[in-house]
Amino acid sequence: MVVSKSWTMVKHFDGAPKPEDFKLVEKELPALQDGEILLETDFWSVDPYMRPYSRRHLKEGDVMMGAQVARVIESKNSAFPVGGYHVTQGGWTTHFISDGKGIYPLLSEWPESLPKSLAVGAVGMPGLTAYFGLLEICKPKKGDVVLVNCAAGAVGSIVGQIAKLKGCKVVGSAGSDDKIQYLKEIGFDEAFNYKTVSSLDEALKKASPEGYDCFFDNVGGKFSDAALLQMKEFGRIAVCGAISMYNNATPPTGPYIQPTMLFKQLRMEGFIVLRWADRYQGGQKELLQWVLEGKVKYHEHITNGFENMPAGFIGMLNGENTGKAIIKA
Image (cartoon, rainbow, N blue to C red; front, side, top):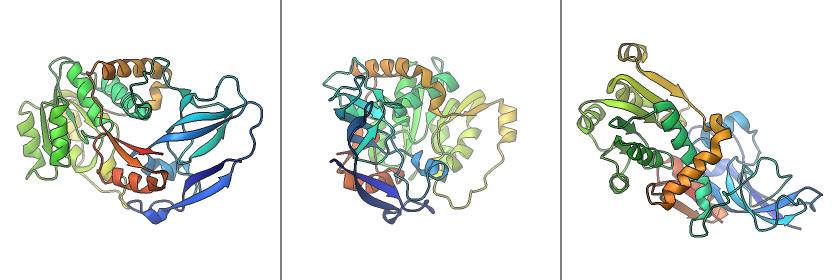
């Protein structure tokens, strides 16, 4: 019998997640039935969406949600041979049984030289979020000025690089000087540390005195309030996340955006990447090709050990990662 370890959510988060909000449980898995497969996880993804989505989709005591790269170690399903790697939504668990629904093999052209963890990173959901959110909503044109916040994160770092491939000037914001250095290394034209600038308004104006055509927003809150005022007429805003607000027990109040939206004739659209699920493979193939050609660079913040998943998740929400936060078995 295989013993599976899982991290469960003891209670819904009140403010920022804490270590005591999670509990490690073990259980023996039953023998496989016909049509089933047994998977073992090599890499887990921790992402900001887990903070708000856990309240919407989980009950207290459920296994914490999340994607992983898992390997088939036993199979009674001919479509899933032993040894195959797949991206799944099995949650924070080491081993699990599946009937094969809702799990997706790595691209057939995946090279052995490339870490399989990228299937939940630059060539997975975060990369696709950047790819579709920028190209389908912001629709950047050559010469446009693109603003990205949380720019050194899993999504923002890919957004900036794709915008550069499209001939744009790219401005990024992040929360440490090391992250700013990283953004310069991967091709951002301008970058600033939002934690150390004396004025966010002045930092945005200095980075692009002419304003911004596109704004890829991962943060929300006060940053977004300031950025909207810097948009050019007919600017486009893709709302990908609101990480600055996820831990607020009481929703904050902010400036009213309607006058700015009206007089600048802006277009703002929120999105969830599942909208383009039927186009994932095409997006992944292009992202994979860009990575292999060195046109899109990636960075992974690896936390070793399944026992450290809560710490990795909490650290990611606190901005400790540069690039994609990954837990490695």
